[in-house]
Image (cartoon, rainbow, N blue to C red; front, side, top):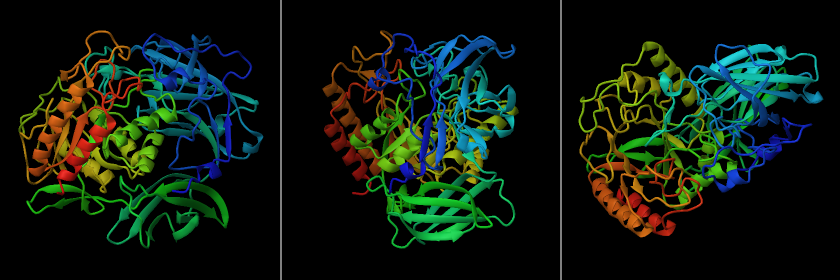
Amino acid sequence: MKKLLPIFATLFLLLSCAENETITWKPAGDKIMTEWGENIDPNNVLPEYPRPQLVRGEWINLNGLWDYAIKPANEEMPEIFDGKILVPFAVESALSGVGKSVGVDDALWYSREFKLPKEWKNSRIRLNFGAVDWKAEVYVDDKFVGEHKGGYAPFAFDITDSLSKKKTHKLVVKVTDGTDSAFQPRGKQVANPNGIWYTAVTGIWQTVWMEPVNEVVVESYSAKADIEKSILNVRAIARGAKVGDDCLIELIENGEVISSANGADVILNVENPKLWSPDSPYLYDLRITIYRNGEILDQVMGYAAMREISVVVDKKGYKRMALNGEPLFQYGTLDQGWWPDGLYTAPTDEALKFDIEKTKEFGFNMIRKHVKVEPARWYWHCDHIGMLVWQDMPNIHDNSLGKWGRRHYDEGIDTPVPNEWKDNYCREWKEIIQTNEVFPSIVMWVPFNEAWGQFNTEEIVQYTKFLDDSRLVNYASGGNFVRCSGDVLDLHNYPNPAMYLFDIDYVNVMGEYGGIGFPLEGHLWQTDKNWGYIQYKNADEVADTYEEYANELIGFVKKGFSGAIYTQTTDVEGEVNGLMTYDRKVIKLDVDRIKAINSKVIASMTE
């Protein structure tokens, strides 16, 4: 794809939150850190444009040092703050400079000042948050502008009418977060981390930024390909549009418009389409323009791919996943997306990209993003690098309140989830899907994992398909298994792969296996209680076992498996079963050897 981002991001104004003061920030605690974290510049934190799938020209990055305070949740806005926090790193993280927990009865307050360019005087001002965990209440110049509940989706407010006439404005955010004390989506976060459960994350954890807009704003778009017909179905959603406004959608290749149509819901013909795949991740540029009486009200740049995921039946009657109509064994890693210094937030964009690139170098063609949702730039990197993604919904509980049925149909019992939290789950899942369906790398939605907070499975599958019918639905990775309208039957087994349940009516996959532990001194989060499902003391033993399991997997591929996930990309806190250490400073296994093994696994399905 031609790099249009620098052209359209013509004005990047990075405002320091400490223009007139000496910055005395340093990381909190004494845990291991990545090299990116060790060299972070608090004056230039994650400066990249945060929404690369929907680009406008002008913006201000509000990342940097803010004031913070942790107070009882029932108290008013504090007059005196506790100190400085480096946004967008969660308050519990080292890179926040704070390293403190926020109790369930506490509130985390943020405050900072900002100025607006004179050129924005006649524009509407839009305040954007990449993600805040969990409930955010936002104030501008002491006026309440809105709130958002949910830790994984972006949100925005038009703050124009709240701005005072002063040159300097004040932004305040109040955050409360129940983590694992309530039925809210929280993934692997817990108040007391242990084993497979990690340090809680509270507050702002993705970029905060502002942009000038008009009264009409393109909020989102979807672009879905039909390979057989050589068409791209594009739908743009705009806020503030009136009857009579015009929308022009253009598909661009190498700077030239190759297809266009008027309307907000159009079909673009694509002659001789270049198909997107892990081997050839070709992307077309997309331009969406809203006009009124010939005047441009909004224009955004995005991109699209001619990519289609489907299910085909092979000669043995097995259902196989197909990419662009061709069977492809999807082989990837379980990717937690955690960092020793930033927790939920990678210290830099280079770090965010690093894990994807290394996974590709190991010979994998897919990543399962495990019970976490990443910033938009992570998926943008996957789109450009050529990495398929299975996207999990962050779980709302563990499986302790129901019954986990792991090996047979209908042996599990749902988690008793209150209706209000079922409604919240659906609301957040909708936000996550509608935000991320634009990324062609995502080929599968995974609403439940190992019966963690699983409920009303068939209804959730139907809801997921209603939200996006262009991708597969892996309804219950690792159980509870029921016969429903999902597409995928997904088994988990540790440490070696196993095929203890098979159903000809589904795509059958090995959703988790492996977990081979290999602790490396000097790169450990903690000195004791480090574990893997099995452990070895040198890399050769780990690689030998990895190859042994891969050969077993190949046997199951011949019997119907169509995909597999190895646990896992990196070590995480007490888990030492990564292909890389938690600080990313050591690649544990020989990349070329693992790539050769993985290539054999991927090829085995179509041999």
